[in-house]
Length: 182
Length: 304
Image (cartoon, rainbow over all chains, first blue to last red; front, side, top):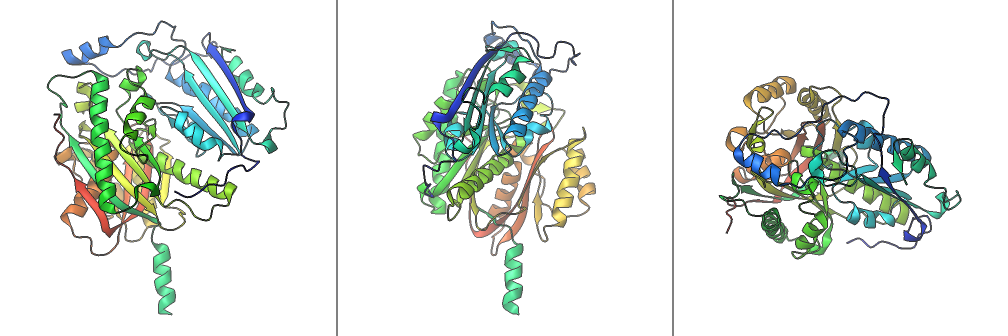
């Protein structure tokens, strides 16, 4: 392994982490028509149906589809990219999409992955700024999600110009406009 | 003068070398009677862990030299989406086979996930270099690709998009031999005809890579014909769809593996490993196979 030199002041660390937890409480884009394009895995054999019905159903309401989910994440990324140009963004996002992921989420300082925990720990000491977006918005009944969203923002000292509690505010506002309550 | 010429030739070669490729084919169906999903995943973890260690051993690279190892997939998601299994548990099981086993799971980019993971690795290394004035980059990284029909869904066996599927576990060890410039082409189609668009990107990329032979994803004959027409006779490895089916992100690596096992590599050979996803994400890596590259094709996995 190549050794890292620790303790560079520009690097964000755990102590400078700001976090937010919210819940999606309504449809994020209530005045916009939404295309009914969600694709479920086609089921054909008896075994397909048997397996599918064995999955648990979420108890929370499904308030968005895949397109709206991507749009919400894309808007959030847009806000973060504009505010902190050197930021790195980790988003918990997994197949299946059923549609193409928007270009803004495919940028080279964004990684979409199944579980962010390991990557987050690696990037805290490397990135000048790091945003972690971990949502459990329910898109289909079987995903067992709870419509929660967690944001964690790590900023190096040089970037922490805002009063401590304000750094996340633009992102919280972006989410609030889309139906996420803290 | 001759020295200058030879330096020029060297500098034109990609700074990415394949140190080893291993592949274990998985049968369809995986089991006569499906065990619980956590058992299925544990069995696959065991096979992956052993395959990785076997490949590393044959390359002779010390196990602590590996900077990162990503696990990618196209079609293993339902188990995670339904939260029937959780990645930290899988990663913990993999750790029993060593710290160089995968710690991150990426499937959002489908068949191109390996390329997006590699892009992330390079970005991470450049951030380290920039911030810590690190003298050199870590040289080795690993990508494993696991595609297994863990719920035995019919859709994954055969569908109109790519007809027959093939399942398996790939492990690829890559070495960064020189600072990378344009070795990696990562992108996403903007049209709905993503495979044709991808083919034109491949052709355009090949123009800048003299002598490279392209390793394409495996598709049915109609798509193969389209590739032939759009690539206009650029050299390419045989499409193995008839033999293996579409093996998702593993295709280009299985293609290189098959080439390496059936031809003695006597001097470095240049290839372009290419993958495209159903939703249009693509990855193209310009890389070398060398006489030292290790090729391992394991017997088809049998449970028990």
